[in-house]
Length: 458
Image (cartoon, rainbow, N blue to C red):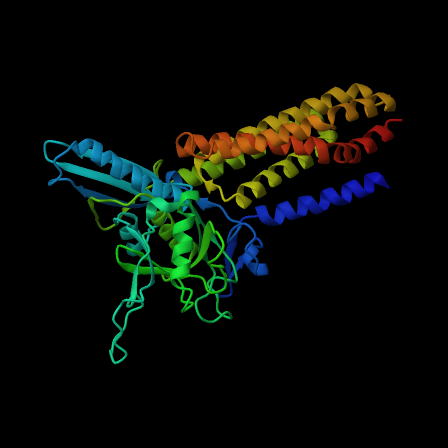
């Protein structure tokens, strides 16, 4: 009964991993197009982890779009190289806060010709507005009611900033930001909230500024207005009540750009990064070819298919009838790894493909070795049981190992270059899944596929 329950749970876990891991297949039949794809969180109207469980091709196999920023330092009289580095660091920080997992950001300068350029390459072309916001001065200001402002009720045109003054809150007061999906992110009608909004966290020393800003609007109850470089970009979300007589360290914002996660991320990144006092001009985007050629993805797929075929053939030749266990174990191991990649929103890069090939190959070889070792126990059921139990992982040690591996994946997020980071992350995730396999999957699957063979020889 215990074995059946374990096998049932394993089947459920493997099925869930499989439906997440399967690729999207498109085909045409009788002049009609059909598409078979994996289920996504949006299908359930839930913002669980991300919008879709699918690989997004990286720069090395897809190419992308490049934007060249010209930094104007002709009138700057100090150390121009140092000033250029400050601009580069600020825009790089904004890019890091946006959360794009795959981009290239390179600087070039020529002191003799006074040419200072920043080259930003992304897998997908960014909208012109976002490109300009990224390189804008990004001076944040929060507007509150001004009781001394002149009132003109007969004015034909009115601005949302009329009758308001600066609260003194700037970029330096923001500790961090995050893009959120919350039903409280609406402006006037609670029935029509935005899909995405911003949660802005203030530094401890800036909480008093936020409280004073809230107190300034207490008589009218109007929301705080957030602007960048004088342009209205966001306002305090109407569904998030903030008592002005209490300390607050965060605020929810309803933004005015097109309602998307990326737009909100760009706004939040600029708000929470230092402002620029240098003119940065964004040139029109140009198309960039894949780093390793247009056939790199196709070649990687062919290599993967050839490797799978070779390892399957090798397993069958070495183990014959006992190869079924290794094939099933390898299938579950690979599917769980791929599902984990998609859930964590990893880009489909050559480093991910090759790292996955490596870890799966090592896993298959280890399983082949395990089966070969138990061959001598075929007629000794007790020894076989003892060996199988010894190969599983139990107790606190494997759990402790898993708790170490998880933060290691995050540690390598931005430590090295994007390709090296992802290669190491995929290897660590493979080891993590390997540990989980030994804890959860190994004993039931091994007994299921090996016991009938052993019994037949008695």
